Length: 457
Picture 1 (cartoon, rainbow, N blue to C red):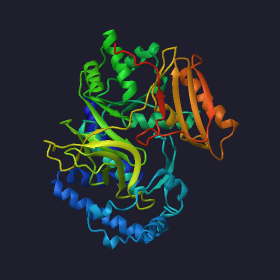
Picture 2 (picture 1 turned 45 degrees about the horizontal axis):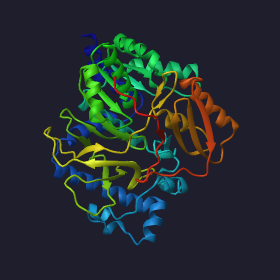
Picture 3 (picture 1 turned 45 degrees about the vertical axis):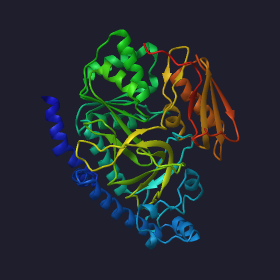
């Protein structure tokens, strides 16, 4: 078949020519290493992780002013860190630490060679961070490995039900995106434009493209699945669906699988690290990429449990330019008490508990995923923190904590971008506040819907 021919050609010829030849990246060699390492025993994975962690900590002690100062103040020497229990005594790194000590967190030898990204602020606080080219190549390799467990291979026809561009992309940028997506056999549908009235258009687009894999924000995907079930509409059946950006709950998985007639897979990631964990073919938990990072679940309780849960604390083992050591990303997760029958030595999470973003609804029938707000606000100058709360169907309250750089143009941009996706049936009320309270669990919910839950059709 044509699609199979292209997948083979892309994997063996086009992608290597692009990634290794033209871009001079080492993604493919890293991927080969990660593909091999996943089959190590749990003990071998742990030994490899420890070796890489100790090397990173030694680098931080030599080259990163923030850790040099902080650890010295606490009387910590890397030579005294002999196991993961010792490592767990290191102080956590928070978003506030990163903002307040941004320059200090850069390794001296990498200071002028870093690349930068901004988080979308899924916990309500946008943040800029630096990373090295190698760490980015490795993150891409880990993504290919994890998505590959669900059958999403290089060059395979994939439809993304994803967040579209905000602002006004240039014609050149739009053309570049079209060429890139065509080469990678990808088709992108903007989930921010989804309404009750245009569900058929999304179904038609799936039928027209006939994807082998769908990768989607969970919220819009579930809403589309509910519409398919309630209308009896069937679409071209993909071989797999991958949920991203928020937790995929079991009841949602059942709705998706009923509507699309294929298995749905859960993943867990964040912009700071990309893919953290993903389900394999067994779908009995999410394999943590423990050969690439250290993921802890830090609980406030001292009580032991067969399946511990707690706040997610992460260290990327390969970002030597701006290392995040024991970074608390604000999520909660629960470890699995079992091992996976697949044979991989990577540990398991049973579930991710803290990435549920409420959807916003309008009288006109829009169902706007909560991901829209961090996606849109991440690049608005001067937005320190934000929270969208819907208390009635025709109103949305957006609380904003302003910082330097926020001006009338910033506010006009926010109103314009929200109006693009919800129209004029919903009144946006912006409030400037000094602070936004956290939940009892210590998180800031980005979007909060206080409307009554809608019944599943």
